[in-house]
Image (cartoon, rainbow, N blue to C red; front, side, top):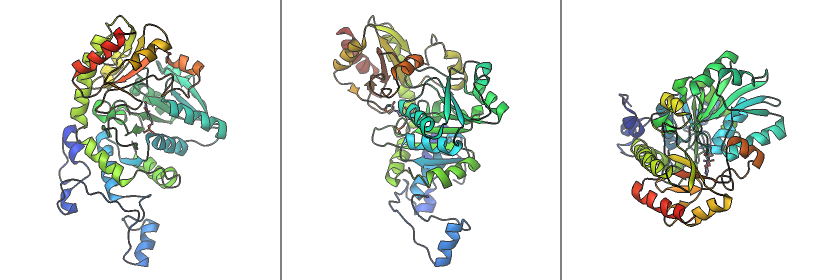
Length: 394
Ligand code: LCS
């Protein structure tokens, strides 16, 4: 870009791409290529030695993917972005890059099921231990930090309990110890929350969700300081190789253009549906960070533009009642994933967080009656009508 766009709504459309460099093509061309030709053997040598800029092989870089990486980096206000083949590829590339055998990680007391699974695997294979923390005060976090603690890993809002973590508070403690804070910003996207601006060091995304927004891609993104991302690019990205395909990058560039307007609609709908849901007699508890009664509402006010598109709620009754309610839905889709145009609803204890042992699930607040709702872009009245008729039948 010759002139930087000022607003987020312009950046999601323009950042990282200049049509003048691409024969005037309005949309980003799809470079569906695995490799790149060299003009001479010497040029190939210079490119591999890093003495000359240019593409060499698509596991190490691809022009379509580069546009997405530059765009997400600008949106998160980072220095560099990297794209991966899934959110878990992004999370694992960062965690493996930042740890060595016998290290220790402090993490939020609630994590996506496969992130929990990855931490368990790191513990088993490399003795990288972890402790969960509610992160409600600096003292509590400090009490868990050991000499071998190499990072703090935070999800906020936490999947699926919708609890929030004060990112500035966590970043301040991490600075005292010279360790990094990694934040999974999947639920908020940079439109609603920008962890790097609050002092955190690395942001990871499952771009499968709101960033793609259309349920057609599985992808991951990482943003942070150039030095760290350069090292990830040349180690856990290049050598483990969980990269994003050019076509998926192309789809994400397209999806990102409408991120702001989609999220505004997701939030509008979630606010409306939540107000109805929390008053329904079959709903025992309902959790939405945009609700003033949510215990973490002050944190939402501090760091999130709006409450997001996800709600979780507990059915009055048992696991069987929760499953019964899901079976009674007529057009709302019973599926994992989130952030799509379609409203998606799922049962965390037996689906997204089934890999988490029951004891740990209980500590995280994932009961058998808990249901997670990703409020879609349909008319909220239609979403509520379907939920209401299903609840009425429980
Ligand atoms: N981080 C969070 C917060 C997630 O919710 C997910 C996936 C991931 C990372 C991993 O991303 P993936 O590799 O799937 O792109 N969450 C899912 C969920 O809640 N339902 O289905 C997948």
